[in-house]
Image (cartoon, rainbow, N blue to C red; front, side, top):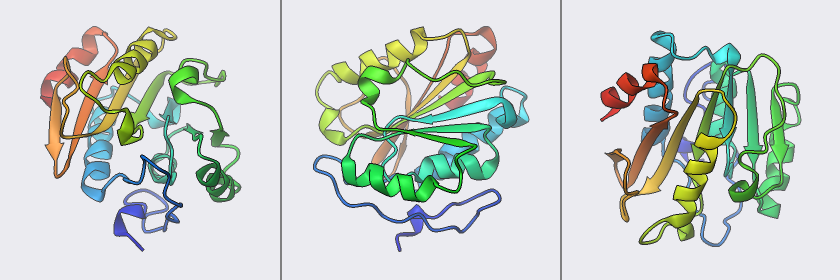
Length: 203
């Protein structure tokens, strides 16, 4: 079992996440170092009072194995939404999530089209998006990725945090990143005054 497909923190620390079948153009799973960095950022926001997990939804737009959403459930996010289009991976997520129906929702929808069409969730005050699209979508100008980001930021009035896993090249122009091994991590936040310091701390 690949150690990057184990829950790293929270109440289910050490739980294995089954490795799903490979899908053309999307066989890269979030490595342990990047997952650790993402949840360290979110923990930092929580400690500073920027978010409360109990009032925050985690939205994984390209869920794959489901490991990121499961990590979010493990640390206490109120609700996790999983989006996955590939038939084999969707079937695997149905099995993985059958015991977590109160906290998790699974959708077989195209995230590039449905990212702003979220179900209403009572008590949610912040939205955290994790984006790891198939690497075939990364190209010279990354038009689809930019359009996705802009659509998310323009949707709903809730504050939003967007975390994007990407290859090191090509760069996502207009946004700062951290390089972690063979990947880059982008942090984008809705333009609220209190979020600007968090963005500065990241860069």
